[in-house]
Picture 1: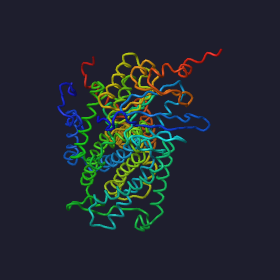
Picture 2: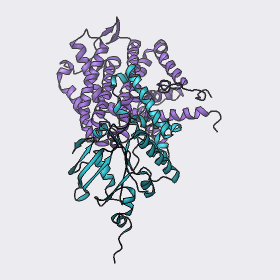
Picture 3: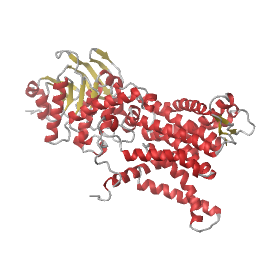
Picture 4: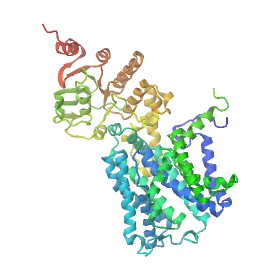
Length: 358
Length: 264
């Protein structure tokens, strides 16, 4: 009833090609972004920001990156954790080597490093596809993590082998390091994610996005109408790895504060892949939904028994939590293999006709 | 859709002594023919005659072991398919090769890709030149959509479209590239009479109004004889006959290939 396109006429291609051509969508997105910037820092406590919202933003960023590569360009990758590690460790190197440099500039530079590494490991994609490519990217995952573990230069010869985010300020406000407040870190992460989510949305609705989807849907036809498969795939690897690299930097500097290479392990790669699959392949919104599902669901499950007044042994609860979580993933994949974003799309189509479905 | 600048009598494509083998299978042997600029050229022949292989050779998907292809005066032996596209060759496929996850409009917009020059950074920001470029090409895509009368399905994912419309969208994607030469691999296959008539009309309009040279493979002899200017007949990878529809129809070799020989 409220979500209806009838009577909305576009008078130009620009209006029709807009990012959110339906005004209701546009207002909702503006409202959510405004609330995230203005409302959330006022009402959310330290726990909410540190344990829920900041990891959600970090994983959203990584999921957007992987979705560009896997969902849009159709190149399966299990190297997400490795590319995130490049972002994290390179930001650490940049900012310790050159402390005056703005920390956001360090993030972007390290993203470029990750992009370079991504291109390098994307080269096999010209010859191999699908599961075989996934194995090749798995090599990237293990090689990169091993490198950051074994080459002391990357962690500045710190005997414990950990890297710790040094305190850095922007315009006099502390954004990283142990002293930085959770709202400040949240706002910086949010700003980065919002900017790059819009950039990703712009990319996928333009020529670059069409070239990726063409390669994904039918690579031979794509080449016959003039796309160059090699450049197209490598650009997808570069941009995807850039996003993952920045996500890795955010993970170290804005969320965890201090990491070892385990923070970028293979389970992170799988986690981000699950987010993309559950959220919806080929959807920027899906990346957010998937990240929310994977980061929020365990917390919800942890708190659900207390909420209903049950109490049980914590180890039993942990195991039940894992079982329910696994069950939910399988349920969602069976119920809607195209992910939460597709459920949302169906809901929108239904809403359009509600309450008179015929 | 700018027409070719060459005069109509000139050969836009010359195929000389092309032979193509896959291992021990001789797909094409010493085939030579030419395509005049602005004509509708049909390639016919029984199944397995090498018709699709011939199209694949022309647009650089297969590389013949012998012979040469000259397109718009440029001779080549080996070439990547995207280079053929850049030269002005567009094609459709026997089994529809649309990008199934994308809408009709997006599929047609992919046909414009070679004309779009803005880099990905500008596109990510969607500012100034990138936005203008997108609008210009949208306008052209809309002209193709109008021409093919598919306005109503512009925003529909192509995987939801019926077969006949998918064929039409695929033609639209090829037309969006403003090709000098259009290769159509069985554009009427699986269509009913009405859809065939529509498709014939589109092909003749493209040829007549924009001067696009058309090379098509088709099994419907009525269609071939009606719309083509000249016909090449292939059988077992060899050139059997080449001429106007009337000449080909009367050629005893062609009749034998299609109907079999009476041995007595």
